[in-house]
Length: 343
Ligand code: DAH
Image 1 (cartoon, rainbow, N blue to C red):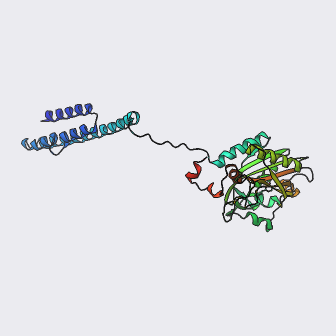
Image 2: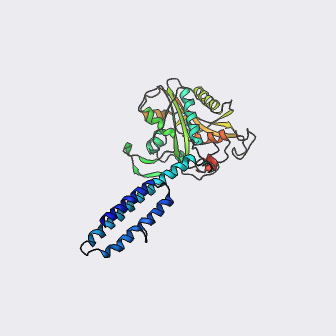
Image 3: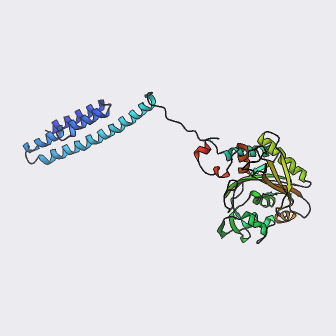
């Protein structure tokens, strides 16, 4: 009987090796292991054996049953993977799978372009920390605690202090935070451009977001003038929009510059005719700028009166809006694929 059982096993293994589809495998399983299968049949014959031999043969049958189950399972997996491979390669009748290629977010695309433009003008492009100290974000920029101008840049505070001057931590409101950080480490001449994320605690609307990207540029040397600033901005805008961009310069107040100016560009959304983006004025305010305030040089530890410099801050999101005629800034961080796929 022992011989008979072993032969059944060998035969089963041989048959399994020739099978290449799941249906035949299922039939084979039934033939050997099913309720009326060959192993069952043999098991029933066990009563004909002398009592002494029964446990040994019973054990053998069980062993073979588990062995065969294992081999069948392995075969099943290999048929599965073979079938899926074959399907992938050869089934031309299936409709093709749609392939979605990802791409860079419009903000990143413009950020890369801006980086190249400033680099071509000799600026070094940096990033800087988004979690910042009150010192670099405000105090070092001539905005001591309780300075009323801080209201414009209300932000999110972190319940922890920094080792730097025991200063409060906050989410930076502008990339101007890098001015003193760079100046205290390096001596002029400096031509720096900082591009990065900033945060504001404010109600959002068509042109305001709590999270925004800013480009801060500054140059420091012994004879930097406002003319250098205006030239740099004009060159930058013309290079970005690939045409002559009309700008308008107005006086503006920022505690870290003196004199301070604001620059508007003609609204690209309506070509200056007036629309909801420019609030019917035909102009969009894009940046604040000016000549770096002596107090900022003092925070950086520069000798009094030795250097002059210009600084400007541009909202990258606004530039993207103008570039692609986007009418609501909130689209940019919405994560809405219907919007993103257009770029
Ligand atoms: N940091 C300012 C803001 O977030 C923008 C700005 C204004 C930057 C004037 C400057 C500047 O460097 O000189 O609104």
